Amino acid sequence: MADWYFEDFYEGQELSMGSKTVTEEEIIAFARQFDPQPFHIDHEAAASSHFGGVIASGWHTCSMMMRLVVDGLMTRSSAMGSPGLEKVRWIKPVRPGDTLHVSYLTQQVRASDSKPDRGVVWSKWQAVNQHGELVATIEGMGMFGRRPKEAADA
Amino acid sequence: MADWYFEDFYEGQELSMGSKTVTEEEIIAFARQFDPQPFHIDHEAAASSHFGGVIASGWHTCSMMMRLVVDGLMTRSSAMGSPGLEKVRWIKPVRPGDTLHVSYLTQQVRASDSKPDRGVVWSKWQAVNQHGELVATIEGMGMFGRRPKEAADA
Image (cartoon, rainbow over all chains, first blue to last red; front, side, top):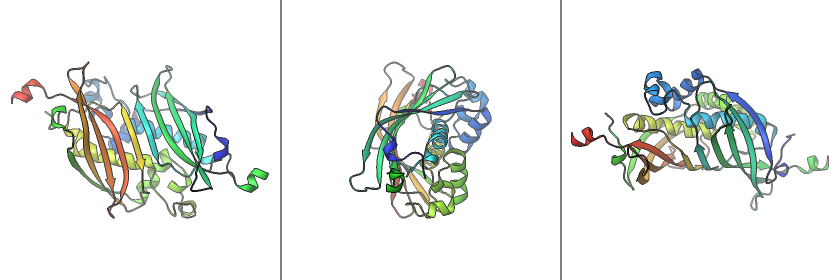
């Protein structure tokens, strides 16, 4: 049994997904594998870049946000994957030692016309750092299974 | 000296970024760290899900596409990071053993009004699998430095 079904989401809902502090080691390890640009993996090159130091790959920032949303919501839900994202914004650099606080804002819900067992939830995820600065936002879609009859009656 | 400056991008340009074959080990390793939903990390749960087997996290697919674009273009360019993405679509599941062929399509270029040293390139990245199926697309923005005077004169 899941805690969260499609029926549990509503427009205007705001859920806290907890926080994650990222280390320089993690930033460099991710970037070496997926985004080996100098300002993500090389101390000196990063220091002399317009970023002034090593910053996290935007994909790493998104992946850390995903992990918080998975732990905070998805694994206790009827989540069935996602067809995609509408918008991602990398607003401020994420630097070693930064703590990202992530929230999940439900923007729209719509039951599927063609598949009666599921619905789509549009949400906006926000990451705010330890200085209260908004560093990244993700707007996307998630498919969630509908509450089974038995669970609804329970 | 970079091979690719802002001036080298033009609307309608199509660049091949090479390919990447993903293993089940890689899919599970990424998902354990960033997206531990059952259909990404658990053989049996994935087999009984609507996906019918383990599939790659969408963030993993995007990160693999990023790596190909970094190796094929970014590291030899004046890339200065990205303000964000306009659209991501996960069209077909990416499964163990799949090979992703990635292309970079330039959609629009615009020199910065406020910062004369750079411009923005809008691009669409496409990943096609070994069966010729489009599996994912990413539409986003990248900032690139302009060709320095010396390089232009060389």
